[in-house]
Length: 380
Length: 154
Image (cartoon, rainbow over all chains, first blue to last red; front, side, top):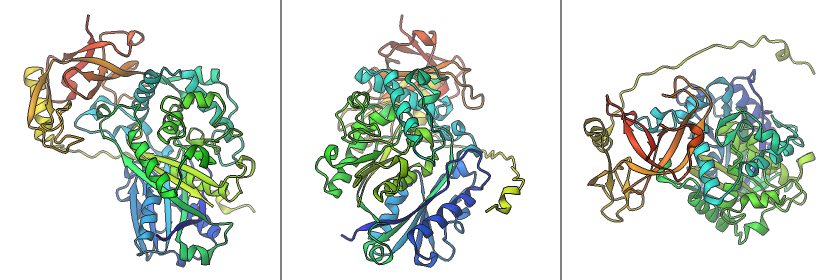
């Protein structure tokens, strides 16, 4: 099978109440990605975008960013959801043989609308939507279930927030770099027990673009130092209704991770992954998903965390960028994580560079409480 | 280099999208809601292949993808699997004033959980594993809010 590489990345700085329209943000990210790849806009033959019509307040919102994403006179298609899934679609388009160089872009302007109102609309209008559930309250139900299943404490989840906001101090891109303590998290405003303000990611604006290329183009267009290979990918969805799942069971993620590792030829992710960008929109999610990813056994994520295993200087640094807790442009979050992995693997991450990074794990989710997962293995 | 953009007074246009919908509830959930509205009963349906009972009822079994024709009345009791005390106000979204409690109730004689309000108890007294029962509204309209909440069984 032909390989696919990421040959260019571009993004806006994370922002709140950005003075840019979402199309202007996509212009900036895409121009930077094309420049980073060192190619011409005419080398690109198709675009895959990730966005949410509800968040943009427009239907078929990809049409609104077609000029911005360099789609004029080309083909553009859209994924409603996280950017990791758009990257998967982009890779599949290349592997189909129909396309050679693909732009994958994602944008999110959370500060223009209402997070609770829009995530409430994710729920079935015939059942749960009427109860007023949203992303935060449903995550709180998952957090409590996870605590109860394995006897975990809120203080342990708080450590994720302390670590990731601390990591953000080394990342100039980040929105919320903070030196905080477990007490700061525990004493922050209660949102939906057991979640407090500092357990939750901030509403964020941002756009990110990747340039993907088939091996035959990637090798012609870029140098070895620039390109990063998509080595493995897997995705899997669980049941839609929260009550149809055990919210502390990561069966969909386990399946996605297994597929990604098999494709990448990874036998033992604990030994072969150098760092991971894991979806941490809420603090408790990081250890839960690390268990699903096979980095530690079920119920053991918090213990590893306490031992410093996932610290920036630890055995397997997790979210060295600062994670989604430090900036979370929802649909674009997964693409930013992939861009971060590319920067790390190029050895260009500056103060937050993970030493000797050769193989990266990136994880994105779609749907409430991680209904669907996309797992990537990227390598040099 | 300074850019002309630095001196622009960027304007914000306020907007609101309000679009009416008439959502068809479908035969499966309509039957569920009619039982709730007319008889104050919570019904589930069972997979003929694996025997799993779903509430709210489903069109097909998650695991077997079999049609679910076999309807059963549930006792309306269950065990609280998880809960959260919601502390923030969303007057348009929330049918209750904060603080209030959402829970997932593992329903007796069913294999799934039902998400709903936990009431008749102070938020600080709610515990995982608590036995609860459904309390129905007096005036019912055929939707999920016909169940007022689940309260602890005394």
